[in-house]
Structures are given as structure tokens and as C-alpha cells.
Image (cartoon, rainbow, N blue to C red; front, top):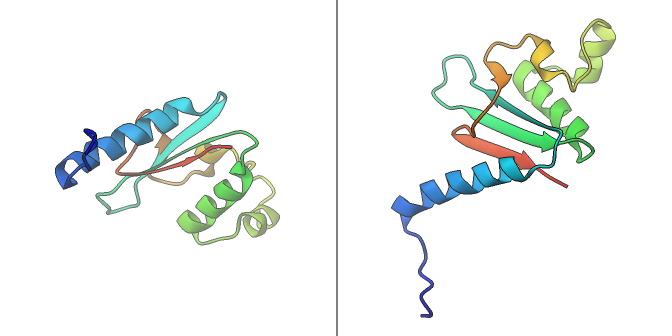
Length: 110
């Protein structure tokens, strides 16, 4: 069939990992690349995004998913809370700068 074969399950995982890595590399600078491992979990979620690509909404959703609190409400209650884009200054355990995709990778590009 023209030499095009579908990848089986054994080949799909490395291909997905490579696609995630290429996506992370392709994001135009300056970009952000973070990993989060929830307490007690064996799964790492990574996230990369560029500036001006909807990152404010994505970061606000990430904050709410991790902390259970809306970022605007948290900021109103604590004006010293850093900007939503200062992800590493949130003080959330398990959240760190990443150098490689996690088990689950989300890339946001424009």
C-alpha cells in the first residue's frame, strides 16, 4: 500500500514521545516549559507554551487544577501572590521547570 503502514501499539509510544519533544522544541522563544508531579502520583504532566498564544488562560486553568482556587480570587485575597505567569513562584510542591516532556505532555502553540 505504497509503503505506508500504521504504527502498532509498540511503535506508537515512542512516536508520541518524539512528537511531543519536537513540539516542545518548535515553540518559538521565549517559551515556558514546566512539569508537575502531583503528590503521591507516578505520573508527570509537562506543559509548554509560547507567549501570546493563550497562555494566560492556560496558566489560570493550571493554577485552578493544581490548587483548587481561581487565580483571580487567590490574587484578590493575597496581593503578594506573583503574576499567574510566574509559575515557579507559586510555591506549589511538585511544580518545576522542565527540560523534557513528561508522561503526559501538553503543548500550546499559536
